[in-house]
Length: 181
Image (tube, rainbow, N blue to C red):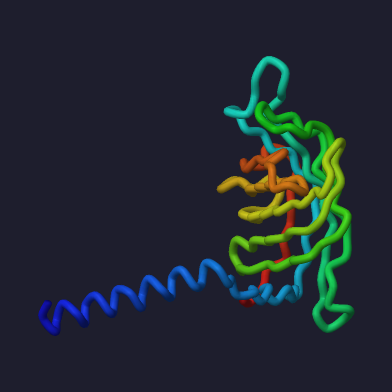
């Protein structure tokens, strides 16, 4: 066997050894920094999604939200969030999902401010309820143009999806305060 072949085999062995070693001893992950920016979100909005409607489901949900975070104050988000009248064709949970705690609240954008949030929730027959929600404030109430958009995802404690939906606001309005970042 030539020198080049020996070096190539040695290099492959070292790479594979490193790959197998990292599988056996996984490094701990440092969680992302969860600091909110100057954020304010409020409103009531009905979202309808035609593809999530069937004979027994309206394909709709209503979001009630009043939430703010002031990093110069406590630095923690405070407020309320409820997803009510949830009636989606392939969601396990129907009815109401209520936020219990907010772990991350961040907003960004000036002309179409968007808020991102997640936390813990409670829902009928769901243990370990966790949610993620995004709200894009594309226009003021009763204005022509692109509709506001709301999307959410809810998991139980085992990581199973129990509810989700993303669609346009067809009634009501959500307002996300614009930010410079």
